[in-house]
Image (cartoon, rainbow, N blue to C red; front, top):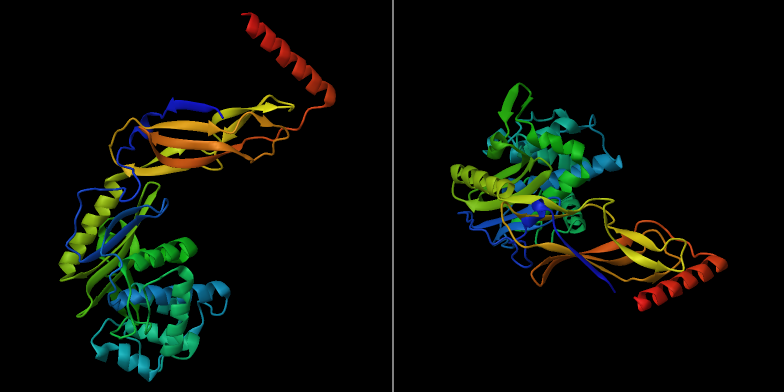
Length: 387
């Protein structure tokens, strides 16, 4: 086995605090009793505080409702121009008389799926969630079963939904960690539909309501706020800057003002205090390994794709990358065959290991070529020995 070592370029010196475990031991705190934040691309956890505490979802449950609706649209079981009727249950439970957030849907009217989606996301209409639940599944109870099935499929391990609106229900609970997972699912699986979350206002039946998400004004592009007396004030949000996106959730705050301020602070922390650096570019040759008995005497080593690492902004270290290969190898060599590892090291500590693959395939050489190569190698050995 051979080892090839060289310093990482200047941008890769920012790896000092990128260590396993609690990788980002930054001096950040929030007054929110529970919070969680991830980098969308790398999956790195940037901050967590009581992230598995089970809380009432309030209107954040509507994100799960929307996940089910988007999935039904994707499957083709419903269409955007399809209409559902506003039942008395939807009108009484989630309408204007209920005192909660509402789309102000008229009793007995027919409303398109497209308008209901906007009413749920932008206006947070409880009535809209009931109408769409009854329209898709026949009842809120049946729709909540679909919500829980989808939640399990997505990977929400500590969440359960008792209704489509997020109104108080003993069977409803979420965690900020699960809410971030749900938001990531919506962003990744429905990129075109996700744009609705950044729409600042929606007018229906002559009534205009503004999006309640307070961090849209600071550059966020989604997702949702929630509030009940028992749940307090909560929020799930995402923001993008250059090629980086963060997703975060926080809940149980005491006022809408505190929610807005803590969400703003968390967003700035996630975007400004970290940077993504490239460890190896796609197609970059980072080393080579000798090949015996092949049509070529060596093969280049590459990573399968671009490899990056998220690190605290402006941190410095003596980070370096080390190529450890399996050479020399015997021909034939298949393109993409794993022939070693690229290690990112800081001192004696290995921060990350990335598989290295053969950049090209190498066939076994013919009989006479092998004899010639053997003789050449023998002569080379004798010459070296004479010296």
